[in-house]
Length: 325
Image (tube, rainbow, N blue to C red; front, side, top):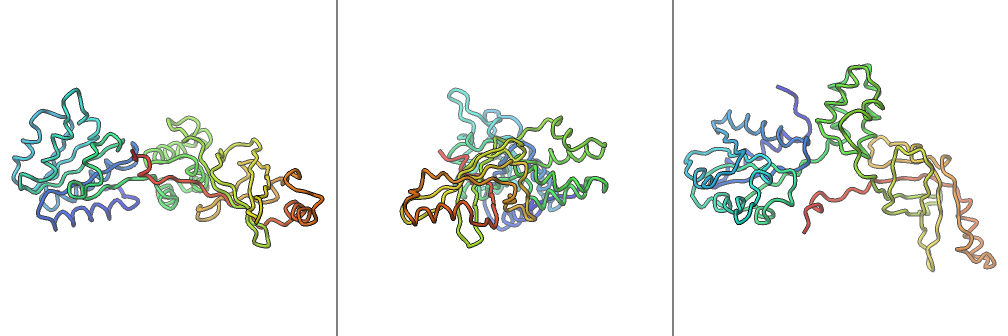
């Protein structure tokens, strides 16, 4: 009966619709870190499938001959392998995942919906990935978006704590939050504990310090760029970021000294902004020939040109990059 957030409901309906339109076995991989929503997806799929007469078999252990047993089932059924990469791990000469390949291929002529959940895709047999004929869908479940966090916390937090939602969203920029974590945060806040104490005491941790690309834009439209810089958004210690301006001859550099904690999140959180007044500018004169008139003029420009804005965008690797061999 609990409200389902994000796109899970739509994807569940997509799976069942596609399965109903095929005449052979059909497979779905659900991957993502623990607590991200794989079990919820599977439960919701089972509930909807039950309503249309599809029973569910839950496979939680490997036994020799299990592929033959599953193949012998004649009726349409959902077979869910939970934490597949752990349950069906290779041991010695035994290769449980490979033993199931003929089953997934549907060589028995039946029609079953196979659902595999896994936390570590790199531990799946390579013949399961990039093979839509075996597993038609691979849903990589990711952390809730900022809008989903806002919706969830608005529902779960008592109204007197709604002013903390923006801070929680800000925290999600440097730590990947799951619904399990959001549920725990809401529980603590509703019991009157501060957000700072909650984040310090809960069994959660920040990711490694995130990396950012940044753009320093002057009011005349000139842009200086900083790429792939680490930055702890909650640090009060001053950091130095070098921005380069592409010129016809040699790149010129501007350094900004600032405290990451002074950064402000914009409304859609696609970028985070730093007020130019919160940064100290430095240009190294050794990069210029100050006896050259044009070089001197450019040095003065970089030292004094009004800054329109400073924008940072977090670098987020493609989820599939984690699984590249």
